[in-house]
Structure formats: C-alpha cells, structure tokens
Image (tube, helix red, strand yellow):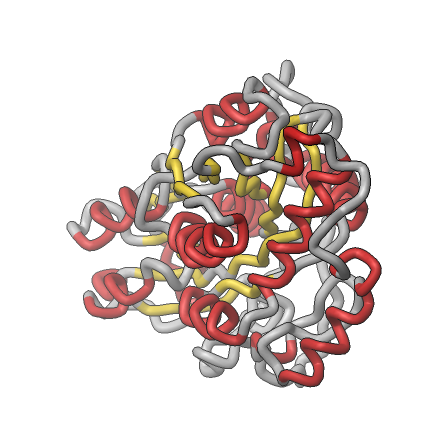
Length: 354
C-alpha cells in the first residue's frame, strides 16, 4: 500500500513554509525568499521581449484568453482560478475569462482544451482529476495527458479535510471507523473530485468498510446534500468548509503530510491511525499540444510573477491552496510521475478500470 512516511511529532503544516518543487519555500513567506525563489528562474523571467516570437505571437493576445476549469463554480479550483485570472489579465493586457466546464471527472474540460487552437487563447487549469485519475481509471482514456497538452507551470496543491456530520455522534476518525463497522451498509459518503474518490476508496478498502459512494460533479453540489442531511461524510477543501463548519460538521483528519497552520488542531490521516494515500492533489497550468515555445515562455513568465504576489498567497491560504510556479519541464515530469503513482494506488486498493 503506497504511503508517506511521517514522524508522529511533525509540526503544523503552515502554507508559508510549504515547498516549491525546486525545494524553495512557499512564495508567501517573505519578500526576500520570493526574490530568491524567482532568481532560480531568472533566465526564464528576464525580459519582456522574447526572441522567437512570430508576428502573430508578438501581438498575443489578440482577444480575451479563456482559462478552462474542470469543475463547477464555487469550488476550490474555481475560486483559485478566479484569483489568478484577474492578475493574469492585467499582465496579458487582455481579460482572462474563467470558463467552467464540469462533467465526466474533468474530461469534458480537458477535451475542450485538446480541441482548441494552440495559439495561447485557451489555457487549462488541469488538476489531478482530469490529468491523473481519468487516464488511470479509463480502459480507453479520451486523451493522453502527456502528448495532448502543453505544460506551462505548476499551479497549486489542494488541501482536503475529512468532514463528518454531527448527527453520527463521532469525534475522531477512529470513532468513525468503529461506527461504520457497527453499521455496515448504512452510511454514505460524497465525493466531488478524484482526490476524495481515491482517499475514501483507500479508507474503506483498508478498513473493510461497507459504505455507499455518492459522486457529484463538484464540491459545491455535494455540500448541498451534506448540509441537507442526505450524506454525512466527505473529503472537502477549505473553499466549502465555512458552510460545513456552520452546520457543526467535524473535521476529523487532514489529507496532508503535516497539520495545517489554519486548523492545527486537526490531525493528519497518519496521526489519526490511517495510512495516507500517496497521491498529490495537484493543479497545473496547461495549453493545447504544440504551443510555440516562445509563447509558453511568455505565459510562464507572467504566471510566475502572479503566483509570487503576496496578496495571491494570502488569498490562496484562505482557500486552503498552496500556490506554486515552475518551469514547463517540472510540470511535465510531475504529470508523468503522478500517472504512475495513481495507477499503482488504484491497483493496490482494487479499484477496477472502467
């Protein structure tokens, strides 16, 4: 069973101490650290005029840029995209319009991007759901996450809390497992993305729990039924946490290697006595395949500048998102690596291809 090795005395996971894939600290830590981090890619970020741009590319963007999001409005990915879209629009000189294309675990949005012209006017906020889960769970995937897209930059890491209805009368994860075992087949759980699907699949498989899975297109839709008392359990991102906390839902564990700085009282899955899923709930910025390298460099430069802004870091922290930026190659390597991890994890928990 894939898992992450953690010591029981790990300190709280503070977004300001989160690591960039390069090993640098999270960009909201300090101005100096942000500059040091940026300096690692100085060659990439230096200079507004990039050699190799054709005349059409030099005039880019010629119209508003679409940022396609594979989830409905109101969830963590949507809100995170909207924070960035405003600043990207200012950097591009044209509006960046967030376009929500939910459905088929993100495949609807991904296919929309795959079929778009590689001219930089369609960008994709790809997440693990459409880029790792769909290609791993489908016998005949509708697209290839490696060859059908152009990687531009890593985007963020998502936080997930396991939320439990107060009607169950449990106070922690151990009590939830015991209650479920004592009531086989009586409990259901909601999911709104691949990370929640995989995490709950591992939890139920590892502990031999009999529960009913109720899938939704996104978190915002699932929360309606949680608040309405129709489903009592879900792995949720902080974007929808206020609604659940208002209804006295209890966060019994966080799906991260360390506790968060915003809710340090909530233990990790490991601390709660359960093995962690060895998957990364990641987000990345991509475009259609065959985008010109010089245009990718231009977008990467502007995106990186946005993601190192202190106000973006502060807004992301409230949403439970950890902003990132990287070279296109870092994202390309991450996509390939996570495909292997997700596939192996599905196999280990007995999740069959569809």
